Image 1: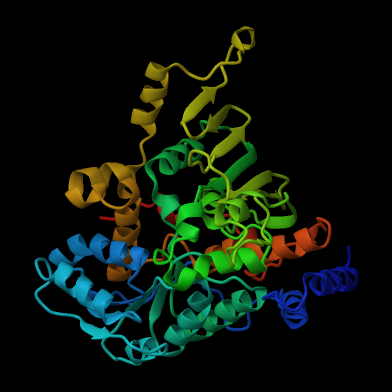
Image 2: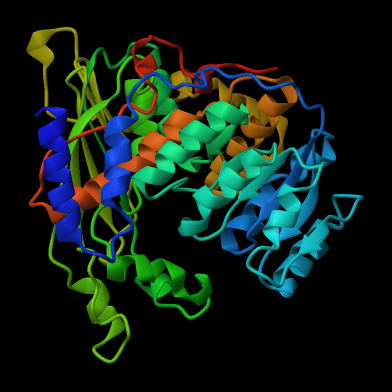
Length: 460
């Protein structure tokens, strides 16, 4: 499909979505017209000046913000970071985090609260190096943009953007200001995903052909809670939008497996959603959330430029055990997650079989291919045990360490934007009868250069 035909189809799909959508015709037009090499130079492999002690400000102190403050205790105690400012709408939340920090940080961070734009005062401070953004989704891109414009590196929770226009704004601003703009995706640092990645990097899987990832998580009680998500912000997305609204836990690790942005990239996708029954049933007929637009299950199929395929699933409405699937298929091995299982092709064709490795053989592979980063963290700090089994601590440790040493980050600007752009593209495809959509090239063609994964580096 040529550019003119694509634009016409997408604009038609946008009209179908309707005025409630966050996706506009103007944003789609910008997506089409912004695929040239970036004017301001690439942020691929970008190195900022080393920062001996990173001065951190955290914006948003709900469940996620509170956790990430805890994750930085080890760095604070070891002199590589200091939390200098905290911000939330509610003063009580700010004071709660300050009290939490008193045993392990000598200085008291300044608190900001009480208004929707109190966070802007932090971005304007001269003594802040890094803004950590853990607010509702619609604030991630605006806060990141404002922070970069005021000379700050920014680290946003997922997704870093949820419109295509925001994706392009982030690319342009980061390239122009030369500030790091990272989406902090913790699942890239999980023990299982790093174990699988190390096996892939060491050649156990041969050539990859296919992968599957997901966010399958029963969130009904949390979505309907009066206080877990402030003002029930998250369920409101489900009443207005239909697509894969939470792509990054699945696509982040898969992108590492397939070296997306480092020799391969997404070519095109198609998406469809099932009908919705479960969340509205849980809400009840008298609830303001009795009508939900987002289907119970979304399936998004992606093909890469080198011919690999990806199935990405999203379902937070259905009662079921948690799973990110984490399936990887190669010419020599297959991994399936939840629970983690491994098949390795025997060299003797007479021994081909249909069974996963027995537990003792699986454990041998896990011991041999445990990612060096995990080995180091287990020997470095008891804090490794914190935050989703350790991945939150490893994520924050790597971010702060890279800033300390002036190294490229594990997850770069383009990674976060590409993984987030899957959401609005899935919405367009769902609304247009699963129309296949080409994927925009946010890197300006620089994905074609074969590069090593930053997350595979060993950093002293």
